[in-house]
Image (cartoon, rainbow, N blue to C red; front, side, top):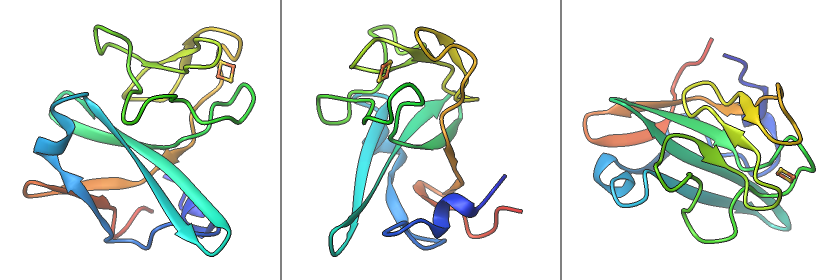
Length: 126
Ligand code: FES
């Protein structure tokens, strides 16, 4: 998995703890904003069965954040990630857009890993 996303301004360092698995239960996803001065890095986590995926919180259609409401990234049945702006839908495990104006585009992955009950930025992501 490409690590260039972690070279962006304000991106969290490898090993940065994000939340616990329990924190993902209520909405199935959780957003995070990291700040470095004026720079922002927005990302979110989503449960994918037993695993967790991380993505940059930017819709490939127009580059806007995917959510309007805090931690609300999923369709009502939690089967897909959904952009709140124009309704594009994405597969949680792959980030592939399967419906909407950016069909076939991908969310930008952020390498994450589970360490016990904690989700963190992956320490290695070659
Ligand atoms: S900005 Fe996400 S679908 Fe248009």
